Amino acid sequence: MPLYELFCLAKPRLGKAVLGDIIKLAGRTVLDKGGVITDVKSFGEQKLAYEIRRPGEKYEEAVMWQLTFASNPKVLSEIDHSLRIDERVLRWAVLKRRHLSPLPNPFRVARAAEAVTQEAGSAAQE
Image (cartoon, rainbow, N blue to C red):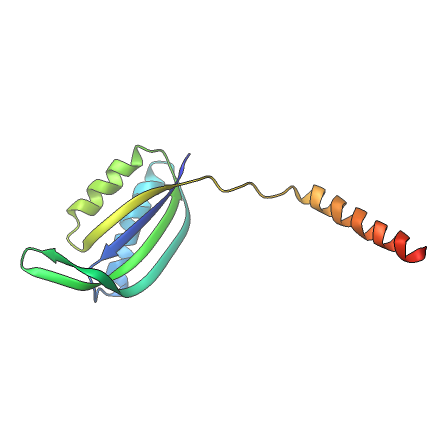
């Protein structure tokens, strides 16, 4: 499963409960389709580089948040649809991330550390 990051801008001055509902909506879509959420970050209310206009409204600030997840690419269209119809969401973007490098094998690391300490010990004895 590819790894994705969803960056989202929501209308400013939303309560924590309302923001939580938006994040849960996206997260539930991922989980219902067999995906895995790896990280959720909220950056709070931030000033925008340019104002976002909607009919009869303009926004100079937005609540920013990020959802990192691994899922089937077909989930992206469902997330896009749910965010598109949600009036509380101003903008969003989904980015495909490169796979993270695998963690080192802990047994190899332990053996390498042991070898280094043995070499240091034998060098100190000489």
